[in-house]
Length: 233
Image 1 (cartoon, rainbow, N blue to C red):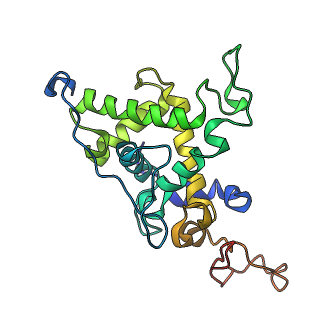
Image 2 (tube, one colour):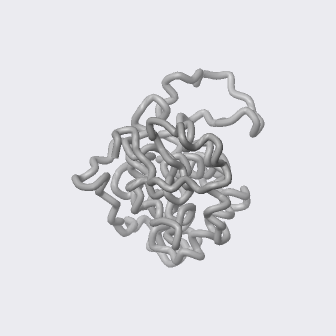
């Protein structure tokens, strides 16, 4: 993944806001433990529900390459996006509870949306671990310990389908990671992401304000008031 023009990248998804090397490793050696992000919201420890601490650290590192810190907003991990993703994976979406997930299976096309025999929670968890193994095979380090340009290169290869992940369709996995990172950036903060409404502030989205009666004819003027969350913050 090359450096992204994040404003253009995320504004393309603004509708979501409105609607919602192995040789260096000893054979069999245990990988180095990773420190996972643990806070959600303005205070309190977040208890991971689907992901474990290592999974969460890999996710935070990957999401931070999709939404890095810059002059527009903090990075994904500072905005609670890993916690948002874990929360969503713990619910009906993550288990595919409302989807038909039985066979027979056939190859789908991109226009048909999510195409995997794994429900999203399983795909995300297995995909993060496969990404970590690929980083160790290629660089002798865990994904979260790579330099950012190495992380970008690996994620780009997975997205393009030229860097395989053992047992995982890397393109489908990356698309899920990308989609959920964007959703976490643009969701209402009550769901765990978009902390301090930084995503909405970047886009100029007003949030859940009660009315805009004085603004229908002012499309040529920037909206001057800060966003409001569903909880009224």
